[in-house]
Length: 290
Ligand SMILES: [Fe+2]
Image (cartoon, rainbow, N blue to C red):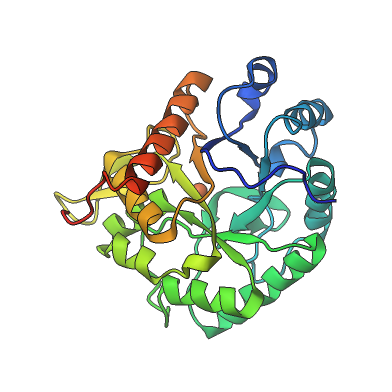
């Protein structure tokens, strides 16, 4: 049954278990909440609290365990568990990663990247169609953060995503911070990346913090690590404003998974996103200068 909530227009936050009780008690002033179903599947109490929150907020379900990039196929048992969760929560958005995270029966913390070629495209497209068939709705695929390019890739990530949208009718979750991180690490242009995405398919935007580390392979250079453990960086906010100008406003989420701050800090980040959208749409944010 579809949710009665409409697509959110104000920014939301990723809801992590340490904030669950506070969120129920205080109903923080954000537009929506996104959860990882993997945190709730074995936790009926947390699920009950989430269902309470779902009466106030649009909810998005963002799975980190349905691996559309796995060469061994989608874990159907996990897919059934997530589907049952989705049927209870009735989310307005449903998403996952362009990556794979399962290894045998264990979940790895890191989402592992894919080589972009025809073989991978056919495999991922088949898995996305299977997932969409199971859920009976479009799935949003999120772009990863990249640290190294695959030597064997025969197409860009942007071309791969465009092809995936064309073949499956899936939609895209554009993680703006990941675009910035990948651009820095691979020496590519993040704005050109956004320019290449199919605007009509963008269903959601993510923003998260990263950390800066020395690049051991290149003295004097730095590498950005997508830690989701800090405030959104100024460069990512600038790229977000560019994304809003290019795509129009889209449901936007603040992700913070490590060194989790206070709820008030998360609300502040979401409100900053809202203010930036308003300023961008009012023409108050210039994009000519780099
Ligand atoms: Fe993300």
